[in-house]
Length: 102
Image (cartoon, rainbow, N blue to C red):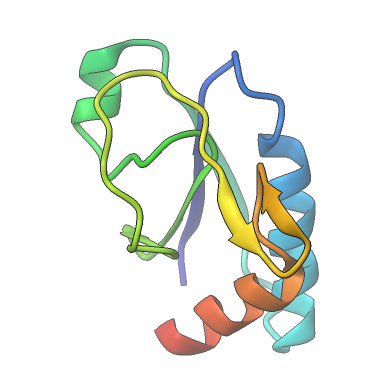
């Protein structure tokens, strides 16, 4: 499994998203899966990948939450959670997304 977090400098949530991804991986028993980060610095870079705002979490190249629209500009992303709108998904949401891909 390959997990990559696409992010832009202007949005502060990529680090917390990474922490939560690692917690979710541990929760589903996949502690050996590495998480990588890719900084998107231009609109062209955003257009070249399945980017739906920062942070976008890809599992094997597919958005873990594909209900969001793709964007080609360097934008922040908001996730719907049980705690309201957040800049990153919950650990439980991430664990469910990982289970769907396994």
